[in-house]
Length: 364
Image 1 (cartoon, rainbow, N blue to C red):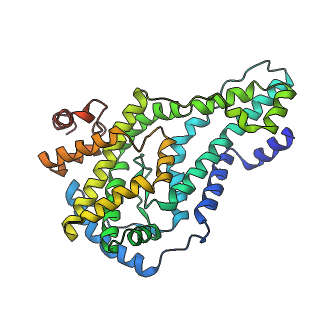
Image 2: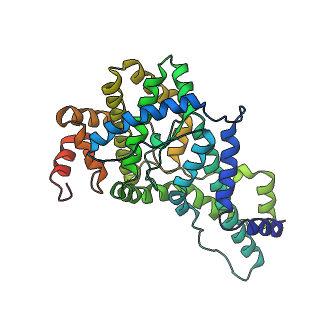
Image 3: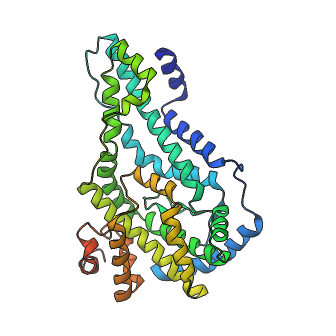
């Protein structure tokens, strides 16, 4: 049986785990309605508003960019998410060191099994998360991870569903979502910001992978037929005793940076929306409630990278952004485009310390 499994997976190539993730993610994303494409009229309206939103984003950061974006369905967002996440997840796939006697066929077999099944488990988890992520998410902006490029994508049907569920005008939802994605794409695709986030994610992803490593270790120790039979009859037993990474310096560091980025994306998006359409208190309230009640897919996706989407650090991040925006204007956050612009754990509760550091930085 194991020989057949190894031959099958070997034929799929080294990216079998990612192919599995993609197939599973798309199957979930299609859902019961088949994941229809957005209506042309809705996509056309977004394109019209995108030109105006792009000007405001360029003005905020002092840059020049185009207004291009892709109005797509859930499947497209799933594929985009998997593509962006792949290089961040790959460190989890590093196999553990071989154990036991290399000449022992039982030990060798279980080492092969662990090295084969481990990545597949990661693929299953990643595909499931990506599929459910796209069920309600509007774009990749809700997950502050470094991007490979500045490509912008919006799930139009999810936007219209949100507008209808909360009795909001579609234009205000469209403008807010466009601004949020345009700002996020600009910040997260910058080399400096991306490098800083990747450095933080190395430690956070390593800790998030502790359960995976423990799983592989336990697989490798099952060299007796009785152990294998127990695994086949009760695979859930393999998960007993695996520890979930707890709060640490690494998780606090990535949460401080991620929460401030999210708070800034939302604040900037609302500010741009109000500049174009006037005050929108109902929109702000609806979006806040949406993030609390309808964002399970986003929460699960963040957890893959050791990021917590709820908690005191998010309240601190909102206060951080509000205080600095009121005192110095949103333009101060152009520091987030630099490698030294992300706030650290201590600065999260002391925004003026961050302001002094980034404004006196040699890179400013």
